[in-house]
Length: 288
Ligand SMILES: NC(=O)c1ccc[n+]([C@@H]2O[C@H](COP(=O)([O-])OP(=O)(O)OC[C@H]3O[C@@H](n4cnc5c(N)ncnc54)[C@H](OP(=O)(O)O)[C@@H]3O)[C@@H](O)[C@H]2O)c1
Image (cartoon, rainbow, N blue to C red; front, side, top):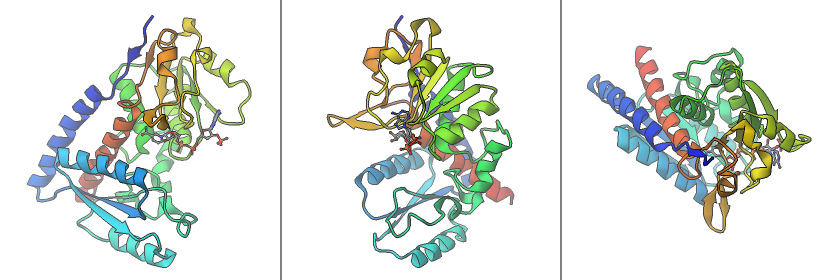
């Protein structure tokens, strides 16, 4: 058995075609969708993520604006800036790029972007759709979970009744993803750093999704060949200067059924989900 590679490229291509059409139709109604990224300071990783977002906006015909704020901005000034952006009708979607400065990190950041412009899908009003059991992927849902489900759907991976182990319980990946998968009738175990016998859990799973941020943590011993496991690798780690996942893909290739690559897997799905959210947000704002 050699694992099938579940690449993002054909999925992104398909989604982009639809987004280009919807963007064009909004433009014909006199409204070009516009994304604003709020960046505080000069974190090099943030700069690189922002470049990807800008590029994807350009590719579908949306506008991109960077609000680059000084590291020294006070909490009061930041809140005022957010209010201005929230009330600016020429901006349809706003992202606060993390991390922010120490001065700002204790603000309730997810709720500072107004729900209708919250294209990261982190505002309580948007995440509550997950609690309520929604399977509507056109809602403003957190981008990485939405991208993963869209990728699994594209490759016709059944979720109903499947045992899924999600490793990681962060607010941006593990928690919302666990809830979304359970809405799609998967039986979800959310594991974390205090989980005992993680290997026993992953060896029993139909699908393993790793979001722990540890390069090559998962080797072949975590997978039972007879389970034909599908592996989704969310991790983005640097190993010897190269971008690499949480899973040692080379080591597991002959013991799992399919795996998402790093790079070229969950990362591009996350960016395209953000643009899906931007277009949906713009359409909803025009409907009023
Ligand atoms: N591809 C993408 O688009 C994308 C998007 C977002 C994030 N990421 C990447 O995904 C990774 C996770 O990101 P995040 O923001 O969710 O990270 P995070 O906030 O640091 O959370 C990591 C989670 O992993 C758990 N964990 C850490 N070590 C573990 C271990 N040895 N065994 C089991 N669980 C362990 C932690 O458990 P505790 O809760 O007990 O501490 C925590 O819940 C990072 O590499 C990040 O760069 C990629």
